[in-house]
Structures are given as C-alpha cells and as structure tokens.
Image 1 (cartoon, rainbow, N blue to C red):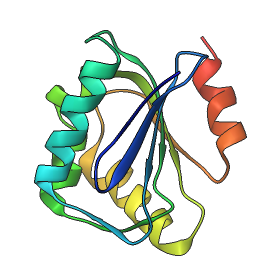
Image 2: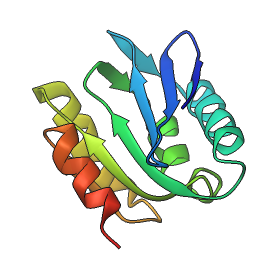
Image 3: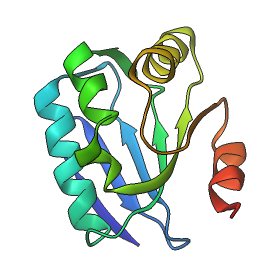
Length: 124
C-alpha cells in the first residue's frame, strides 16, 4: 500500500488497486489543489488509470474551476471510474453539482458509504 499526503488530501493506493483520496476536515478545494491532486494521482497510478474512491465528506467548498478541472481530460487520464463518497449535506451538494453541471468524462457515481462505492468500483 502506497500513501502520500498534501496539506489538504490523503492519497492511498490500496492493495486492491483502488486509489483512495480523502480530504482533511474543512477543506476548500481550489484549482491549484485540483491540479496538484491530479499530478499526485497520475504519479501514484503510474499513468495507468485505476478505479478512484474519492471521499468528499470533509470538503466544505470546491471552486467552479476545480470542479471543471476534475471533470476534464487531464484528470480523466488518472482513473477508470470514480465513486464519490458523500455523507453530509454539503458533500452531497458538491457531488451533485459536479455530476450535474460538470459532466465527468469517465463513469462517476455518488455513494453514501465507502463499502458500496468499492463494490461498484470492482464491478467490470
């Protein structure tokens, strides 16, 4: 298992070949944070897309530019499909905005718990 961390995000390449990201409490995600996350994700998956488990629970705000970046081609190169974990009203709003307005290029779904998200990620 490989692990990296920024001041806002924990990245874990799990033993089941799922890249898991989790933000620290009260995270505000900016475009710069999104670009850094994409760079680290690409390095951790060796530039070969893997399933992504992204826990948005601790995100309190994500800028429009950051959401646009995460739905774009550069970020899409880092994952095969994405399960977004949304467990509170704020993260649900962010997740719904992301899916509704930004239209990710790869299959992306919202889940209220990690187990269901992992189960979906492991489906072929």
